Length: 121
Image (cartoon, rainbow, N blue to C red; front, side):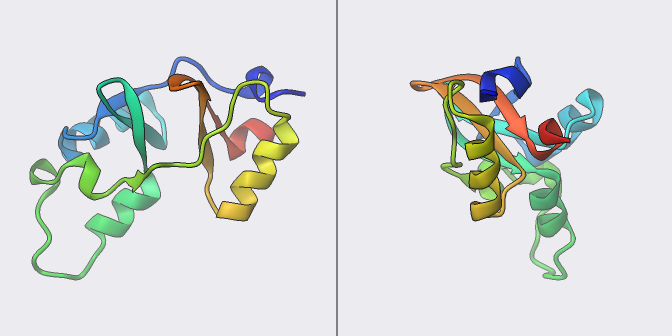
């Protein structure tokens, strides 16, 4: 089985310079746990609920509210990605090896889908 058979598409993306509040709102409305961050239609990062919880749950008093933070300040930059023709087992191995729960699926530099741990359930 290939990644293209189990991936979700289309993928919800937001520009990396949008606010964290925008990302949270978008994730709630779409009922998703991650957003792919882009710049000029190229994947530059991935933002997960875990990233947001880590940032907003911090006890540091200098933390800014979500409306004043950019996605780029919280996201994981340069996420590991896979091509749609990669064997699904290899994608699962990459997720385990790198302790991530989702991988953008790219054809060249074009985002065509996302595969998450839930796609293997």
